[in-house]
Length: 338
Image (cartoon, rainbow, N blue to C red; front, top):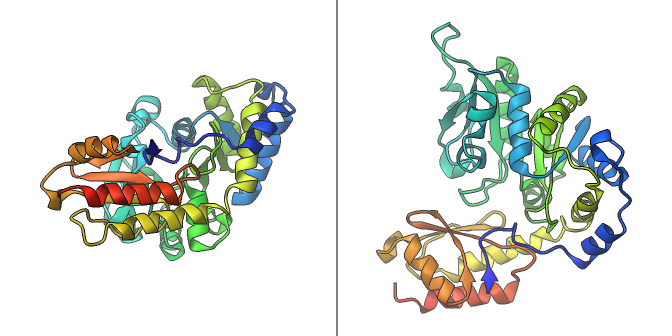
């Protein structure tokens, strides 16, 4: 079975398993796990933030960031199809008491102009935006990357409005590799950033939230309140360190495989744009059948995928689906009578 559902289905590499087995550990709630501390230092340096905090999941890290930047009754400006908007169970409303003000832009890339249109007069009649949440790369709109110039324009707007920016950088490493820039060239435009260790890098779990030292001190409190304070979590952090240090450069291979997959569907009724990174969105509308039908057909051919919506399939390339898996997927698509 070739599993294209997500880059979270990967298995830890042999190097990760070895690092986990030999990890030096301590009690991280007391700040005494040396492997966790090293991971936090390494990631904070990579994204050029003052401090970092290891989390069990990216969702928890995102939600703690929202909590730290906002007060109940505030608004969060974000793209309509983003992960934090759609796949975190409206946690920002439950945990932070804030309201989402969604913005829709082409291929999931929010612009400064689109955000500016959402600002309203500052009177007691309206709730006010307190945070801009961006996603790079985009999750459900094809793994697109924010151009640096667009990020700079958003940064200027946010600064003029006195509003912080949180970057959901679950696949920041993909954006960095695809644009051939250092991660800090992207994250310099955000006040806080979450990066994932299990998406693309093959670690079994974990994300890291980075930002100003005072912000991270506050985040530590909320991580504990939400049950995210782990003990000898250096066992997990060790795998994350291997991911950050050894698995980022190879993401270019995943991007090439995604482009090959999209190119292989040319001439069929399955439409897709050339991907920028490792996510391929396949539009099934011209076939006259929806995504559920084709997901079932692909499963019969030992290809596992997920629906992006009723008429689109999402496929993600990663280290555990190589060229052979891509070729098999192309063969399956082209064999269908669509």
